[in-house]
Image (cartoon, rainbow, N blue to C red; front, side, top):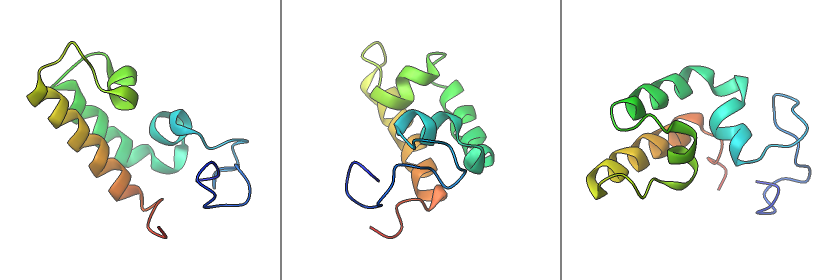
Length: 85
C-alpha cells in the first residue's frame, strides 16, 4: 500500500519493518490462518508455492494458473487489507 500511496509508512500492521508483497502473501503472522487455506488450495495445483503465489507459473496449464490466481485472490479478499481502496 505504501508504494501505491495508500499509507504514509511502509510498516506492516504486525510491526514488520516493510510490508511488501512477499511479507503480505507469505510471511505476515496476521494472516496465518487464511494463508493456510490459500496454500492448501495451491498444493492441489503445484509444489512451487512461493513462485506461483507471486508470479503465476509458466509450467502450469492455463486452468491451473486460474486456480492459483483464484486462491490468491480469495486470500487477498479475506485479509481485508485493501478494503479501504
